[in-house]
Amino acid sequence: QVQLVQSGAEVKKPGSSVKVSCKASGGTFSSYTISWVRQAPGQGLEWMGRIIPILGIANYAQKFQGRVTITADKSTSTAYMELSSLRSEDTAVYYCASGTAAAGTNYWGQGTLVTVSS
Amino acid sequence: DIQMTQSPSSLSASVGDRVTITCRASQSISSYLNWYQQKPGKAPKLLIYAASSLQSGVPSRFSGSGSGTDFTLTISSLQPEDFATYYCQQSYSWNTFGQGTKLEIK
Image 1: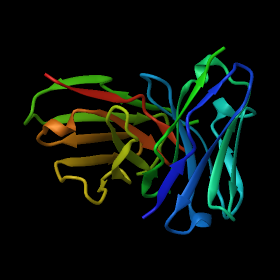
Image 2: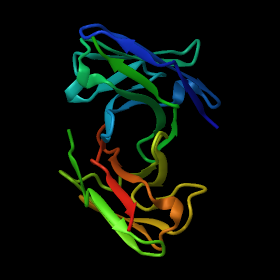
Image 3: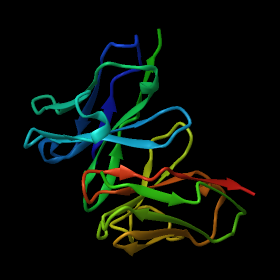
Image 4: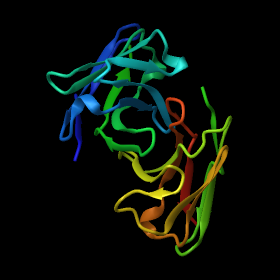
């Protein structure tokens, strides 16, 4: 049983960056795909990108290209999502999640609220 | 990116009703279509994967069908705990979610 535990809530100024962590336990971290999904207040789910730790390769949704960086540290079984040039529209709950293309995204972190405010 | 369009965006129904939610992909995604349920303040929960496979532990009143570009989620007899928001997701090329369907009590 995979468990994903995320870092705590953040308050950031416009123009700054935020880095959210996601620590995995259970299973084999390197073989997961870890995705990042965000949800603005009252809005739907938005896929941001993913990483396959065993390959160290990340892919990003076109909307976030150039502004998001997803990394993974195999030694600590932790994935990270860094979003730069923050603006108020980036205020959202950010989830890490794990799954496969064939079997869906079955494991989710608890979510991290990022608030962007001056 | 592949676009996913869900309909309706909201739906009012009663306990015991049969409801269907549809999801259309902007291009063929074979059977790489998943359905999620989300309740307020909670992470999404996987219900159906690969268009029609029921995730372990999910009640059998939930079912999915379709392939290519058109998919449906059906709840055969609504229970009180089913009132939530439902999302489709394609996993054929990276991921994209539909905009969601809010299922409310009539």
